[in-house]
Image (tube, rainbow, N blue to C red; front, side, top):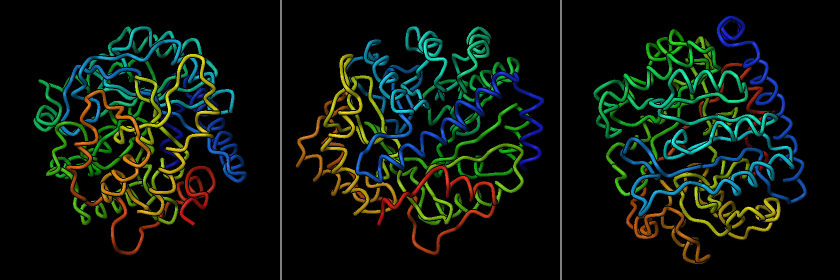
Length: 397
């Protein structure tokens, strides 16, 4: 697997894009995690990775998406976005996940990437707006990797995503990335209606043939005004997905990514660990994208370090989440999360004004912390990387 992936990275993307990926994302990312660990050891919480939703506007309307249903469209203020990126970089956190809505609807987004060439940006996109002009600009910049979301084959994509020919248009975006020699990824939210198609070696190999270099699997988390709880995976299906990920990693011609399990296969939550948090288009700091409540807001003149390290809400969230479960508190223990939100009088950051009512109406469902023996990593590379560079750090005691 590693030999095949290395050969593909040497032959397919622009060499400058590969160098930027390895240095700005790989090497600097590891340094950011080491700095995070040192800060955490002295009781200081500032995330190694920052995820930013630059807009809540989108050209699709996916079921279960937290970004839908806002009372009015909202783009992040340009000065606030600049302050977030600068504040994170000042602490050695140079990796940013850029989300929406559809982030390519944000005016001047590629200029933002150009203004921060020392940072690295993962662009979470549905791929529909990834045309030749956009891909050509991304290649020239070199510090951006498009991560195209695929939610199923043709019929399922249209059903899930509220559009027409969504799968074909997303694949056309992937082809533009391949043609312009970008380091490219695919993200897929696995649910009951797509697990057969997406958690398969056939799908993995097809993406590799289409020029995809990494594939990020995550479980469907019902959210927003149309949560579609019936699509959530059962505990048995989550174990099946985990086993598939562990097995396919040893032979896949691309990198398989997850953010739910450590090297021993124990479940964990990035927000509970504190390694990553999310900032909404309003500037409100959330634990993670589907948990749309906040106690702190970033403005153009904010001290990002002070906001994170002094945040009572984030500190209480981390303690509450770790005590409640190693999985997702939103899915498994919504009542505990609701209690925290009410006690802290946290702000509804959804833009819908219905976040608390939605939370109160949730029933528990399985997340990634499922009963039974953990399924550890069997690939030495992934095991080493997760143990030394990514998750854990004693957050669960």
